[in-house]
Image (cartoon, rainbow, N blue to C red; front, side, top):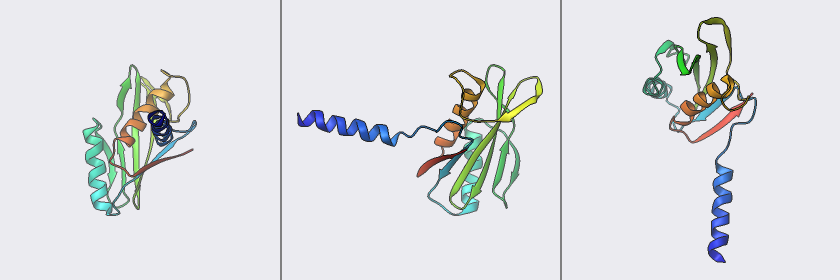
Length: 140
């Protein structure tokens, strides 16, 4: 009986700690354990490169990085924008259909599995979550 109770408590705690991104989220905010902007900037830039993204525009003084377009799946591409504020990194992005320059739109967490929105948000979320962090939160 005690083992069952312990298992149930562990299952509940695990479920509660595995926060899912709310629907319609556009911004993923990663809280990190440093406030040294220069160190954080270098760590972020290296992290994006390690995740297979080429850096496009960067501003070390403002703490801004944008990547070049990268294929996500099939004819879907995305571009990541990251900005540093104190000990937080704010991840946002744009999604595109290859060959349609006017198809650019914000990455937002909505849609069905396999949709352009879900594919690009899941990739943005994967990159943000894989950054060493203390906490994640989301904004619309």
